[in-house]
Amino acid sequence: MGIFPMAMEQGEIGWFSPDPRGVIPLDTFHQTKSLKRVVSSGKFEIRINSSFSEVIDGCAEREETWIDETVRESYITLSSGGYAHSVETWFKGELVGGLYGVSIGGAFFGESMFSREPNASKVALVALVEHLRKRKFILLDTQWTTPHLRQFGAVDIPKNEYMKQLNEAIKLNVSFI
View (tube, rainbow, N blue to C red):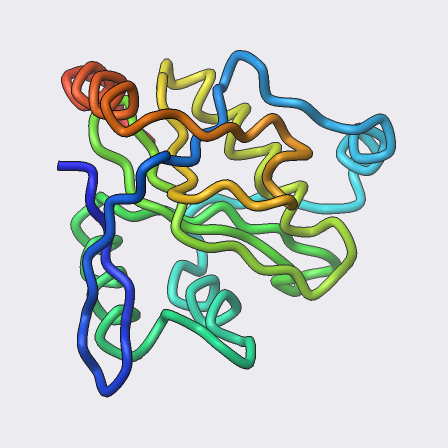
């Protein structure tokens, strides 16, 4: 339906469907040369779904967060059911960054990302895009477009265009794993 939850004040959950909607077109995803060097250096190990709850906790480690206990537990339940996934960046056996989101059909809905080491979340995003391309996904929803995401090619699209892409994507018979 193109809506997503966020924790509000006093334990309430708000539902959002922004217009315009932020997406990263998978065919025009962009990496800087310096990020390509970091990725190709092999400094980080990428894992998928090995520490989902720790990734959510990492994403919530900030002064203001939309991830309260209700949201946390809901996404952990979605992960247990095979709908929510994490892409993790590890360095010397420690989780240093990552992201998580929800997949439905050929759509991946990015929820949040974090980094405890320079470039760790960016490397996780690169790994996510590569993974989605291999699995034949066609939509990477970022909800809103931020300056951080614009460097990777994120764009805003009108809600009616987003809904067309969403409806096409969720019909695809592809799997994140």
